[in-house]
Image (cartoon, rainbow, N blue to C red; front, side, top):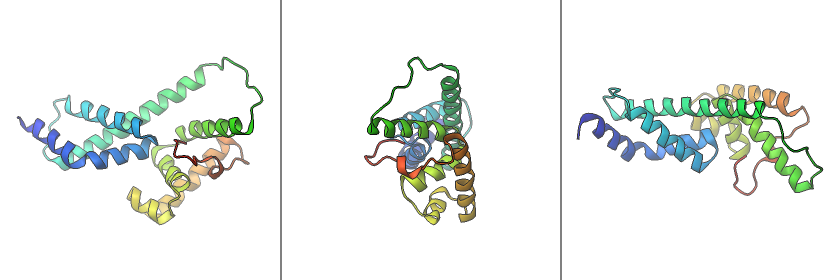
Length: 176
């Protein structure tokens, strides 16, 4: 095996769990997270980029994951905006209204920058405290408060001032 192959094996052995957790936080879905990790690793190691250490390679894979995820979100957002709705909205039952609110919230979350989305998901989906969010994200407590404040303001603009984010969070473990 060459040097690149050794680094690849070490990244997969030592950092797969951390990369998977990071991908889950970005996407909010285990399966999408796994696909994101795989896409980033393939993208990084299919190039002739020189990555000297495992730590450098892991950091580069993380940056690639962020870029790939943001590109997907932008592409999906553009697609949803351009494709007209095919069927008119019908009056739905309470559970259908709840599902529609969750869907609307998921679309609104997709418009947020990565760190703001992550902070909102950790706060309202995982029910973490501000300090726990700061520790998980590796940022200061003030940064978490700023991310949440900015995110809630942006979500209020998208969803309307009377929307309650916490009330439409998943209660059965499904993605927001």
